[in-house]
Image (cartoon, rainbow, N blue to C red; front, top):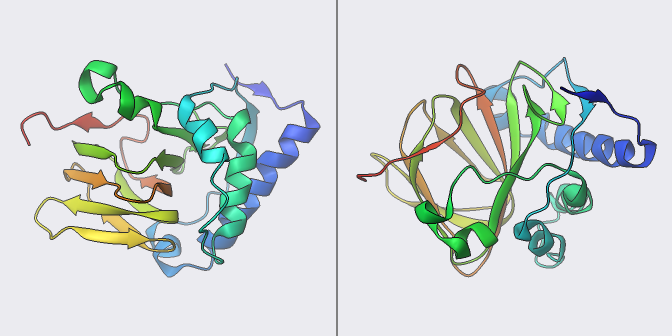
Length: 205
């Protein structure tokens, strides 16, 4: 059950991050055209959950894109206060992967900001990680905040995406991600059906 948010200092951190995302959302055509800014956002108090990737992310202060630098810094400030998740087990992806990857649901049915109109996740992958082929019912748009990654989509050539670039995944379209010399921080937006369902690994890809 959600609780009304009652920590004013932490509330300000969440609201500042929401405003930084809104600034990007309304000024980047790919984001605007993917789904409208949600109109029913309500901040709810959710117990934080720390993972190792959160600590790594908070130390990332260099090589930032000027257009997304403020959002990156807001997310780093917010990182200790959110409910980090991973969705996978060590036997699936290995301990090293889990130590250097994670995400949190900022907007959504179970997010820090409750909404039933969309989901918006913040996700981090450290350098030299392979996120294998997976899929999910909801349609998805990646917006790269910082760093870069190689994106693979079924039926398309791999593409390296850097800050401010986007990548669209159709419903249930298999896709994968590899980071090389740089980590990547991304905003992942979901729309359509399946907002409460998680990703599934494609075992035989």
